[in-house]
Image (cartoon, rainbow, N blue to C red; front, side, top):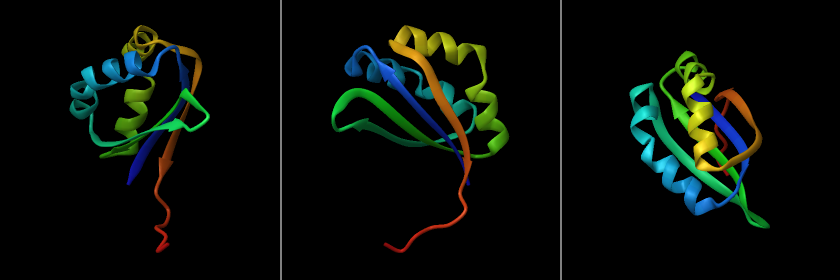
Length: 94
């Protein structure tokens, strides 16, 4: 399975989450299977997003698109996001 992991700071989590939800269609149209959003327990404006994709190629295409940069800017992402492309290598039992 392929994953896209994004870590970034946002100006306001609620504003960011609204924008993130509004662009769910763009993710699903390019192969996203959904995922999870995490917040730092000590800094609620530090966000981690882990999304599952149908292929590593589609995840990379989405993550490198010019459109995503504008979407993040409008959502209040500050600084440069850290983006990682991952492939599942094992599952743990505990």
